[in-house]
Amino acid sequence: MAVERSKPILLYDAKKAKQVNPETLRLFQKYQIDMSIRDLSEKTIRGYNSDLMQWFIYMYNNQFNLSVLEAKEEDLEEYYFWRKQQGNNVNRQKRVMSSISAFYKFLRKKKLITESPMEFIDRPKQGQPVVVQTYLKKEEVQFMREKLSEYGDVQLQVYAFLSLTTMARVNAIAHLKWDQINMEERICSDVLEKEGKIVELSFSEETRDYMNELRKYREDNNIDDYGWVFKTAYTNEKQCVSNDTLNEWCKKIGNMIGHPTLHCHDWRHSYASLLKENGASLEDVSEMLNHAGTDVTKKYYIKVDHSKVRKIKDSIKI
Image 1 (cartoon, rainbow, N blue to C red):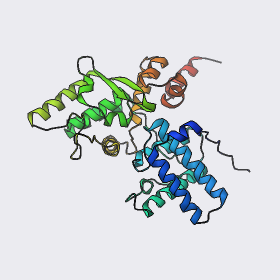
Image 2 (cartoon, rainbow, N blue to C red):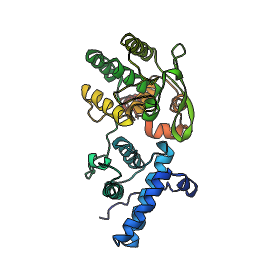
Image 3 (tube, rainbow, N blue to C red):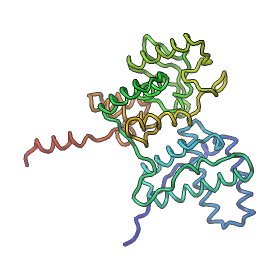
Image 4 (cartoon, rainbow, N blue to C red):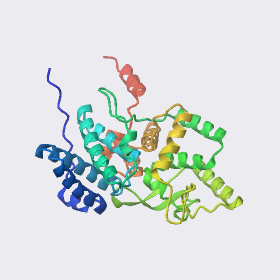
């Protein structure tokens, strides 16, 4: 039996290709020389270049036009997960991973990076997903609430519930400042999101209470957070918390509640599905996710409630 071909992903856009991060394009051009010296076939070079340019344009579209030197493990995982959602099979995923891994090997050889983020990502096995997508149920959110209360880190509570109830992407959460937040209205203003959009984010009353507690703790203990909502030992006036750090916080929470594969994008999926299950319209959920339309929301963010589907089927006697 013939192996089913994976459908191609068509991301290339000549105009966007010219607007890819300048540092990325400069290193990409140097990589052309390296491949030429290694005497790779034209077909191999063409394949590598196609895979890499697709990835560059994805970063341009979805990850604030990151430089390849800035991309972290979770950024790559998000890209591979997106490709899987588009219908890529395991073999095509492995090929794309190999292309990106080879590029990072070149960057290491040139001493531009000390380690490759690809080192931390396992190649998919046949029949296994690249990234497990987690939809937290209402009772699991309650369990998370209890475990975080026991753990006693209010910053972690703010991170979890701000990410969950705003449904913001990880980069937007990382860059939040206190002066963007209206506690009374429970709104974060002037937030930079995907494709350079400036959006408003709303959060829950519970999240507001955690945030007030966090601010009071820092004031009482004379902790300078430089205006950032989230603080680590490495934050300063110009440097916010890294996406990588937030991903580690997410994994820590996931381990607390029995979901070790929990990743930052799962907050968006989880709350979108919870809102829809509790009566919110698809249009409203789509708007809160800052999607251009409901197609993406329905296809990738709303999990089908199969128990509800079964009840509907059972009620119809045929």
